[in-house]
Length: 265
Image (tube, rainbow, N blue to C red; front, side, top):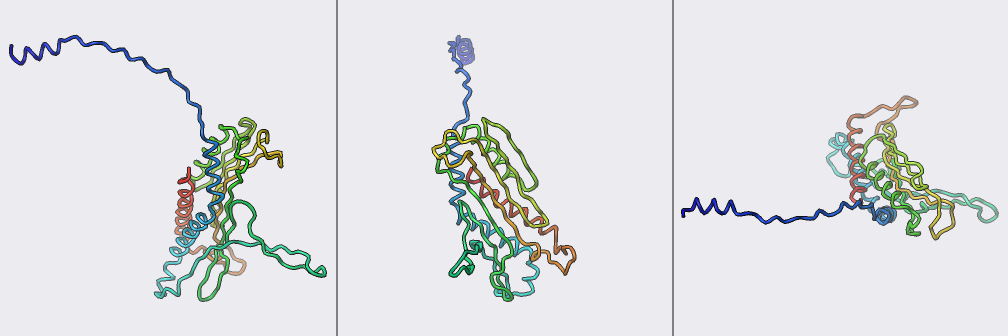
């Protein structure tokens, strides 16, 4: 018997049939969204220094590139503008001794922060040229009153909002008794961008009974004063320095902040 006959015998050997039982299809319910939402809100709300640092990078990048041709005229580093970002204060007048009002500086109250973007060069010292504010709601109540479906939708809206660099808005009404809203903030003539995602619902299961409603928010807003970037003469309209370049730089800054947020999802 030659090798060809042996090969034919091997081919003709009956194969044993093995019956494989297909597993039943199980519809998996989305779980874990509430814990993830809590983690994201906590990280964002407590991430003051991270948000501050990232916002400073955006402001510096926009400012330096926008005025790069001006800097080219001054090769020395001391001629360059210095951009800083500092905690913003509000002044509240209170009754002092003898009823005389006295000013009292106060920081932002709540989770998140409000910052001033300041400019310093040989002509000015710490002049405010923009601002940043962000908010991340308190999750001390462990969000036990938030349904999984609502938490999943909140994260979905956040993911969508931070993938946009233009106008966008979406609302969801009465999802297990909760409402949600997500939108971007885009005001080109104010050099402003940002996002907000909010959900609110009736407080039914939460241990904290101080309010009738639960409110969870995650938001960010960035702005550079158009007076400094685009200039103005008397009562005339804005005289745009380079609108195409500024639009490009603002979009890139927006994408940078979005990437920072999406890295947490």
